[in-house]
Length: 220
Image (cartoon, rainbow, N blue to C red; front, side, top):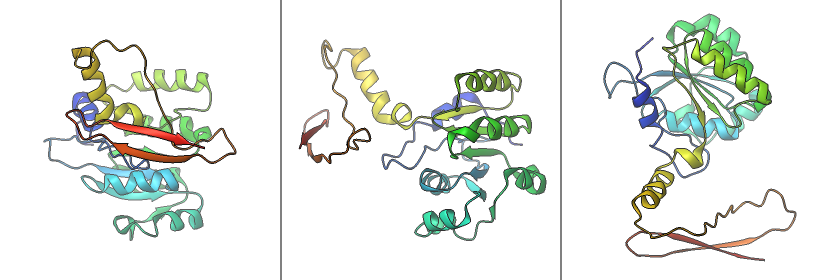
């Protein structure tokens, strides 16, 4: 197991991708800033395949694990970086066989299995990046938090793209520095209307100015 500093782990999360399916360069750690970790990705469908693909840019993805082989193969079909990586269907078997080679895991399964997999990895001394929502119940979150505290050498983080990206950090800095003046109102827009049956037509206009702001207009 390579050593990892919490500050390096958190610093790495700021290397966010804006494509919606990639996490961030979450685990830049090891003996030197340029060292690579061996990562096993558990849950490699829509979100997980994008996560795994992104991680291959600066780390070694040595294993993929998903219970649904057909779904997995469909989702990695266009990702050259994920070809020829062994697919496991049971993370416990994967750990039994190659656990000694794994430094960290990315978990992007449905949330009802997040707790069990995260605890299993933590107890095996693996760093954990688990996609949101962290767990299925509030009690599981509390138990998982307590478990992580018992393992001081294991770094854990929940994947929250909106809060881990450089854009969020930049907006925070603007607000704290007073660069944009008093902030009285904030408008947040999601271009995917999960809660509606009607389809919204989204157009995006880029304002070419010093702050490079994006403005979204929704037309129905």
